[in-house]
Image (cartoon, rainbow, N blue to C red; front, side, top):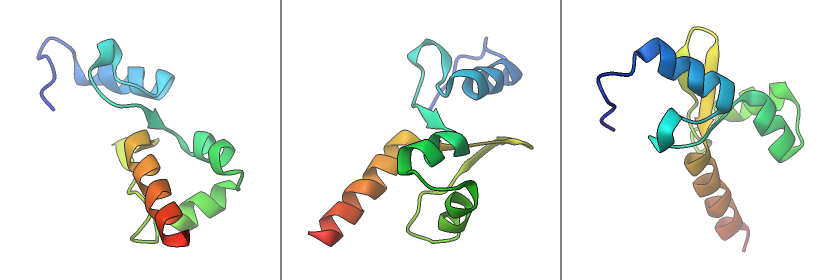
Length: 86
């Protein structure tokens, strides 16, 4: 993805951390661990345990304490699981 050079990286990271998406429609929606907990109705440790599974989408580390998952990766993972169960 090519980001405009005029947007400082720190501003992008703050925007993603606050809203879960890049500003100005520049990209995807990102979910944090609490969003995943609500989406799948599981605990925080379950999300991190799933992260060790190579089939589960890899989290994106935006900074030292800011980790997110791409919504598109999660929906693709959900679709694969649904297809396997069918």
